[in-house]
Length: 316
Ligand code: PMV
Image 1 (cartoon, rainbow, N blue to C red):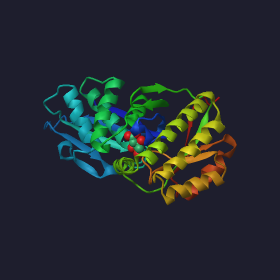
Image 2: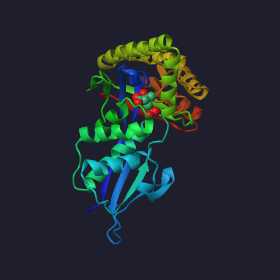
Image 3: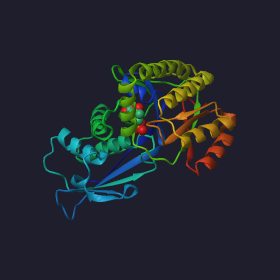
């Protein structure tokens, strides 16, 4: 068995996070330059029917069975072995490296699961097709997030911009023009499980008020989807800004994110919002070509060097 290298990208939610958990549509884009890599190496000289997981960025160097049940690698390995009907654990080392930050709204748990499923299934001689990888990664996400919508594993496994709705599945979206985004890290690491649970709690306490916000987010997503498809940058910007107001109204922003949003808008971004679980993690700004250098520089300063750009759509 030769060593196998596989990877999976991060993702950013353009519009519709949280509301997507409650049945509304949402749009997500892949972050192909930010990846989690998994290398599987056989233990040729010392076979022991054990999988050793080494992930220096996560402080992990242990057998996979010793990882917590909620760890993406634990679930990804366990479910891949079940999927392939493998009862004898292979003797190998799983090395995880990453250019994607963990716990910051960029889909790291889904990327970790997808890269692990791909690498291990290929190592075992049965590379799994994307739809199976997606299904297993969704199952992993249920252990990690409690009640995931399924958008993260879907965009990460397909690595294309897409519109996702729980009841309908997903459709790929082709951007009507190139859109530039800048992401900046608030430096606050927050649990998506907790923010998803908080929205569910608010919904139980004030159903009419909170449901109305979620429905409005759904409407904003539909407007943003048309703008994305039509290459209407002002329409997309309006949708993103309205989305941020609605997310703030259900307590998903935080002072650090608000500050990054302010910095982006003051430097000339057309729109800025939180992305992913919120209350920390990353901010996402939509920026015209001419404003990119200034907004990027401002966000680099405001985030202590934790900003990066990504472009979606035809760049010609
Ligand atoms: O924080 P992330 O990268 O896991 O994104 C979560 C997106 C949510 O809409 C808040 C949850 C979900 O399952 O869709």
